[in-house]
Amino acid sequence: MIKLVATDIDGTLLIPEGQFTEGVKKCVQKLCQKGIKVVLVTGRMNAAASLIAEDLGLDTPVVSYQGGLIKQNGKTLYERCLTPEQTEKIIDWAASENIHLNLYNDDVLYSEQKCYEIERYCGNLHTEYRIKRFCDIKKDRVNKLLAIDYDNPAKIDRLERELPEIFPELYCAVKFLQNYWGIKEEETLTIGDQNNDIALLKAGGIRVAMGNATDELKKIATHTTDTVFNDGFVRAMEELLSNY
Image 1 (cartoon, rainbow, N blue to C red):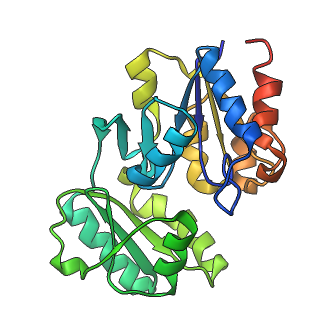
Image 2: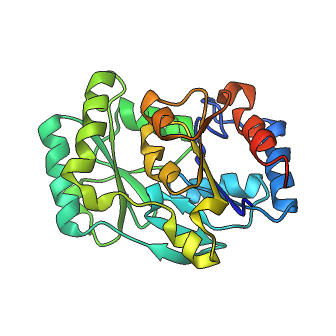
Image 3: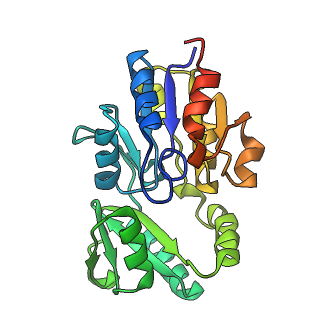
Protein backbone atom coordinates (compact mmCIF):
# COMPACT_ATOMS: atom_id res chain seq x y z
CA MET A 1 0.00 0.00 0.00
CA ILE A 2 1.37 3.41 -0.98
CA LYS A 3 1.53 5.80 1.97
CA LEU A 4 3.81 8.51 0.55
CA VAL A 5 3.96 10.25 -2.84
CA ALA A 6 7.13 12.31 -3.20
CA THR A 7 6.95 14.47 -6.29
CA ASP A 8 9.13 16.89 -8.17
CA ILE A 9 7.51 20.23 -9.08
CA ASP A 10 8.81 21.74 -12.33
CA GLY A 11 8.11 19.58 -15.37
CA THR A 12 6.12 17.15 -13.22
CA LEU A 13 3.35 19.14 -11.56
CA LEU A 14 4.01 22.47 -13.27
CA ILE A 15 4.25 23.10 -16.99
CA PRO A 16 7.18 25.31 -18.11
CA GLU A 17 5.00 28.41 -17.88
CA GLY A 18 4.81 27.79 -14.15
CA GLN A 19 1.21 26.62 -13.86
CA PHE A 20 -0.54 23.44 -12.83
CA THR A 21 -3.88 22.30 -14.14
CA GLU A 22 -7.08 21.88 -12.16
CA GLY A 23 -6.68 18.17 -12.78
CA VAL A 24 -3.38 18.15 -10.88
CA LYS A 25 -4.83 20.14 -8.00
CA LYS A 26 -7.88 17.86 -7.68
CA CYS A 27 -5.67 14.77 -7.91
CA VAL A 28 -3.43 15.98 -5.07
CA GLN A 29 -6.48 16.73 -2.94
CA LYS A 30 -7.90 13.23 -3.58
CA LEU A 31 -4.62 11.64 -2.53
CA CYS A 32 -4.66 13.62 0.70
CA GLN A 33 -8.27 12.63 1.36
CA LYS A 34 -7.24 8.98 1.06
CA GLY A 35 -4.64 9.52 3.76
CA ILE A 36 -1.68 9.42 1.39
CA LYS A 37 1.03 11.93 2.29
CA VAL A 38 1.98 14.10 -0.70
CA VAL A 39 5.35 15.81 -0.39
CA LEU A 40 6.93 18.30 -2.78
CA VAL A 41 10.61 17.60 -3.47
CA THR A 42 12.39 20.30 -5.43
CA GLY A 43 15.60 22.15 -6.11
CA ARG A 44 13.73 25.41 -5.53
CA MET A 45 14.27 27.54 -2.45
CA ASN A 46 11.88 26.82 0.41
CA ALA A 47 10.14 30.19 0.24
CA ALA A 48 9.09 29.58 -3.38
CA ALA A 49 8.20 25.89 -2.94
CA SER A 50 6.09 26.61 0.14
CA LEU A 51 3.83 28.91 -1.89
CA ILE A 52 3.15 26.08 -4.33
CA ALA A 53 2.41 23.68 -1.47
CA GLU A 54 -0.02 26.21 -0.04
CA ASP A 55 -1.70 26.66 -3.42
CA LEU A 56 -2.15 22.89 -3.65
CA GLY A 57 -3.63 22.77 -0.16
CA LEU A 58 -0.76 20.73 1.28
CA ASP A 59 0.26 20.92 4.93
CA THR A 60 2.98 18.27 4.69
CA PRO A 61 6.70 19.12 4.92
CA VAL A 62 8.35 20.69 1.88
CA VAL A 63 11.67 19.26 0.73
CA SER A 64 13.69 22.01 -0.96
CA TYR A 65 17.26 22.48 -2.21
CA GLN A 66 17.38 18.89 -3.54
CA GLY A 67 16.87 17.48 -0.07
CA GLY A 68 19.04 19.97 1.80
CA LEU A 69 16.17 21.53 3.75
CA ILE A 70 12.88 20.13 5.03
CA LYS A 71 10.40 22.55 6.64
CA GLN A 72 6.78 22.26 7.73
CA ASN A 73 4.74 25.33 8.64
CA GLY A 74 7.91 27.33 9.25
CA LYS A 75 9.50 24.65 11.45
CA THR A 76 12.78 23.12 10.27
CA LEU A 77 12.71 19.33 10.45
CA TYR A 78 16.00 18.76 8.70
CA GLU A 79 18.73 20.98 7.30
CA ARG A 80 22.05 20.25 5.73
CA CYS A 81 24.00 23.32 4.67
CA LEU A 82 27.18 23.40 2.65
CA THR A 83 30.30 24.13 4.66
CA PRO A 84 32.21 27.35 3.87
CA GLU A 85 34.97 25.15 2.44
CA GLN A 86 32.56 23.32 0.12
CA THR A 87 31.02 26.63 -0.93
CA GLU A 88 34.36 28.21 -1.81
CA LYS A 89 35.36 25.08 -3.73
CA ILE A 90 32.21 25.27 -5.87
CA ILE A 91 32.57 29.03 -6.42
CA ASP A 92 36.12 28.46 -7.68
CA TRP A 93 34.92 25.57 -9.85
CA ALA A 94 32.20 27.74 -11.44
CA ALA A 95 34.73 30.48 -12.17
CA SER A 96 37.03 27.95 -13.85
CA GLU A 97 34.09 26.75 -15.99
CA ASN A 98 33.03 30.35 -16.74
CA ILE A 99 29.49 29.56 -15.67
CA HIS A 100 26.92 31.67 -13.81
CA LEU A 101 26.28 30.71 -10.20
CA ASN A 102 23.28 31.37 -7.95
CA LEU A 103 24.04 31.27 -4.23
CA TYR A 104 21.30 30.57 -1.68
CA ASN A 105 22.23 31.57 1.88
CA ASP A 106 19.65 31.27 4.68
CA ASP A 107 16.88 30.93 2.04
CA VAL A 108 17.90 34.17 0.26
CA LEU A 109 19.03 34.05 -3.38
CA TYR A 110 22.16 36.00 -4.35
CA SER A 111 23.84 36.74 -7.66
CA GLU A 112 27.11 38.60 -8.07
CA GLN A 113 25.70 40.65 -10.91
CA LYS A 114 22.48 41.45 -12.72
CA CYS A 115 22.67 39.39 -15.89
CA TYR A 116 20.63 37.41 -18.38
CA GLU A 117 20.91 34.17 -16.40
CA ILE A 118 19.60 35.53 -13.10
CA GLU A 119 16.91 37.64 -14.77
CA ARG A 120 15.58 34.72 -16.78
CA TYR A 121 15.78 32.27 -13.90
CA CYS A 122 13.96 34.49 -11.42
CA GLY A 123 11.51 35.67 -14.04
CA ASN A 124 10.45 32.10 -14.79
CA LEU A 125 10.06 31.21 -11.11
CA HIS A 126 8.73 34.60 -9.95
CA THR A 127 11.50 34.69 -7.35
CA GLU A 128 13.30 37.71 -5.88
CA TYR A 129 17.08 37.96 -5.64
CA ARG A 130 19.80 40.22 -4.26
CA ILE A 131 23.01 41.43 -5.91
CA LYS A 132 26.07 40.96 -3.75
CA ARG A 133 29.65 39.80 -4.23
CA PHE A 134 30.02 36.29 -2.92
CA CYS A 135 33.21 37.29 -1.08
CA ASP A 136 31.11 39.72 0.98
CA ILE A 137 28.58 37.09 2.08
CA LYS A 138 29.04 35.22 5.35
CA LYS A 139 28.73 31.67 4.05
CA ASP A 140 27.42 30.06 7.23
CA ARG A 141 23.97 28.97 6.00
CA VAL A 142 24.48 28.11 2.33
CA ASN A 143 21.54 25.93 1.31
CA LYS A 144 22.39 25.55 -2.36
CA LEU A 145 24.59 26.66 -5.25
CA LEU A 146 23.08 26.51 -8.74
CA ALA A 147 25.10 26.66 -11.95
CA ILE A 148 23.23 28.07 -14.97
CA ASP A 149 24.05 28.14 -18.67
CA TYR A 150 21.05 28.54 -21.00
CA ASP A 151 23.10 28.66 -24.20
CA ASN A 152 25.22 25.53 -23.96
CA PRO A 153 23.15 22.40 -23.21
CA ALA A 154 26.06 20.09 -24.05
CA LYS A 155 28.12 21.75 -21.34
CA ILE A 156 25.31 21.32 -18.81
CA ASP A 157 24.96 17.65 -19.74
CA ARG A 158 28.69 17.19 -19.09
CA LEU A 159 28.53 18.99 -15.76
CA GLU A 160 25.51 16.96 -14.63
CA ARG A 161 27.57 13.83 -15.15
CA GLU A 162 30.71 15.22 -13.48
CA LEU A 163 29.27 17.01 -10.43
CA PRO A 164 28.18 13.92 -8.44
CA GLU A 165 31.75 12.61 -8.83
CA ILE A 166 33.35 15.94 -7.85
CA PHE A 167 30.99 16.64 -4.92
CA PRO A 168 29.43 13.26 -3.95
CA GLU A 169 28.71 14.40 -0.38
CA LEU A 170 26.23 17.05 -1.53
CA TYR A 171 23.56 14.80 -3.04
CA CYS A 172 20.70 14.05 -0.65
CA ALA A 173 17.59 11.84 -0.95
CA VAL A 174 14.27 11.83 0.92
CA LYS A 175 15.02 9.01 3.35
CA PHE A 176 14.58 11.37 6.29
CA LEU A 177 10.79 11.61 5.90
CA GLN A 178 10.43 7.86 5.44
CA ASN A 179 12.17 7.36 8.78
CA TYR A 180 10.29 10.29 10.31
CA TRP A 181 6.91 8.71 9.49
CA GLY A 182 7.97 5.07 9.63
CA ILE A 183 7.20 4.56 5.94
CA LYS A 184 8.99 1.88 3.98
CA GLU A 185 10.59 2.29 0.56
CA GLU A 186 8.05 -0.07 -0.99
CA GLU A 187 5.26 2.15 0.42
CA THR A 188 6.69 5.19 -1.38
CA LEU A 189 5.93 6.41 -4.91
CA THR A 190 8.41 8.88 -6.37
CA ILE A 191 7.95 10.85 -9.58
CA GLY A 192 10.05 13.34 -11.55
CA ASP A 193 11.38 14.37 -14.94
CA GLN A 194 15.04 15.45 -14.84
CA ASN A 195 18.42 13.99 -13.93
CA ASN A 196 18.40 15.91 -10.66
CA ASP A 197 15.43 13.71 -9.72
CA ILE A 198 17.47 10.50 -9.90
CA ALA A 199 18.12 10.47 -6.13
CA LEU A 200 14.43 11.20 -5.56
CA LEU A 201 13.27 8.30 -7.73
CA LYS A 202 15.71 5.88 -6.14
CA ALA A 203 14.07 6.55 -2.74
CA GLY A 204 10.80 4.99 -3.92
CA GLY A 205 9.58 1.46 -4.43
CA ILE A 206 7.43 2.68 -7.32
CA ARG A 207 9.51 5.02 -9.49
CA VAL A 208 7.67 7.05 -12.11
CA ALA A 209 9.28 9.03 -14.92
CA MET A 210 7.23 11.66 -16.70
CA GLY A 211 6.77 11.29 -20.47
CA ASN A 212 8.95 14.39 -20.84
CA ALA A 213 11.66 12.92 -18.60
CA THR A 214 15.28 12.44 -19.61
CA ASP A 215 16.38 9.07 -20.94
CA GLU A 216 18.61 8.59 -17.89
CA LEU A 217 15.67 9.00 -15.52
CA LYS A 218 13.46 6.68 -17.55
CA LYS A 219 16.11 3.97 -17.28
CA ILE A 220 15.82 3.79 -13.48
CA ALA A 221 12.02 4.20 -13.40
CA THR A 222 9.64 1.29 -12.89
CA HIS A 223 6.91 3.14 -14.80
CA THR A 224 6.66 5.92 -17.39
CA THR A 225 3.59 8.12 -17.63
CA ASP A 226 2.39 10.84 -20.02
CA THR A 227 3.98 14.29 -20.29
CA VAL A 228 3.37 17.22 -17.98
CA PHE A 229 1.34 18.85 -20.76
CA ASN A 230 -1.08 15.90 -20.75
CA ASP A 231 -1.48 15.64 -16.96
CA GLY A 232 1.04 12.82 -16.71
CA PHE A 233 1.09 13.10 -12.92
CA VAL A 234 -2.68 12.62 -12.76
CA ARG A 235 -2.59 9.67 -15.16
CA ALA A 236 0.14 7.99 -13.11
CA MET A 237 -1.80 8.39 -9.87
CA GLU A 238 -5.00 7.07 -11.46
CA GLU A 239 -3.22 4.05 -12.90
CA LEU A 240 -0.93 3.12 -10.01
CA LEU A 241 -3.12 4.06 -7.04
CA SER A 242 -6.52 3.02 -8.38
CA ASN A 243 -6.83 0.35 -5.69
CA TYR A 244 -6.32 2.73 -2.79
